[in-house]
Image 1 (cartoon, one colour):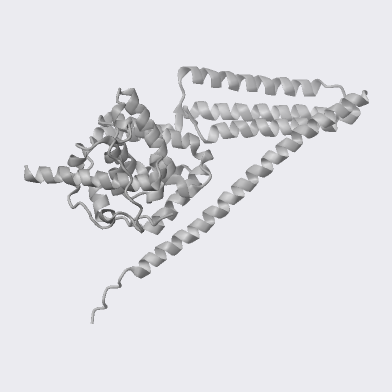
Image 2: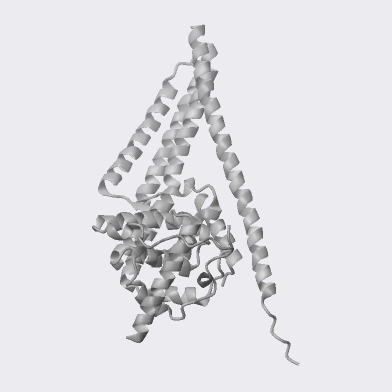
Length: 190
Length: 198
């Protein structure tokens, strides 16, 4: 399995090779990001068949637009942004608007020297129950948690994908994790 | 940029907990495979057949005209007909290959078409400029040279830009390959070596 550094470099290599028209590199890029992007898109698109369609459109968008990707180190952010824009369009087309509004309780946490404490070490131990519990969360919370759990992007990159400041992202992640914990606790009690 | 988090077990669990229908995934994979090639529709097929036939007609016509040309005809102008024959031949071969394959390779074929048109225009403009001094009207001759120069300078700038970009990407790729190897070696060295059996 690739380490974090190797993975970042490998992604950049793939980005350059794809830009140069290497078909093998395209297949590797698709294999590399297929499941993380599918998992991310699933938070927006409830129907599985539609999710695969949106993912396919994401690859088509990437294939057409790879020439405009000048910085290969941004490949992961770039792909997530394409996927997100397509997912939001699909989401709106299916008549959903309300969940895309900013959350009313999302007040910024005070700036501290480091990340909020609960963001650093705490891990939810059962992925299946996390998946189930996430269905009860709002879309912005589902989205930010999915990006966080997938560990493809740094905080700055996640903020860039979501088009928010890093401060807002940290707050959102904090509230999302709190909401997730509450749902998990309720499930445990039940 | 802050450090990315190392890939953890939870990430893998989280990914594998995402359920999907294998049949839907297979359908998607087939569609993604097909994304790199555009299957020829009936209309496409007709367009490529007509292109191929027109290219063959051009080859025959240019060849016939160049044979019929009077002896005193400038050799450069005669060469222009040769270039026309090669250009038409290129289109005929490309159309034939696409028709035989039954699909257009979305990255390769449009590039080949653009390259053929580009090279043809550059050669024809150059011939046009070289023929300028054989035109009786000097002002018209100067016009031909100036027009050609404007085009060729633009073409040279574009080609230089593309070549520089390609070279940059190649260098970047090589550097990343080295960096990748180093990261792999570092990772291997970090892993504890198993104790030797006594």
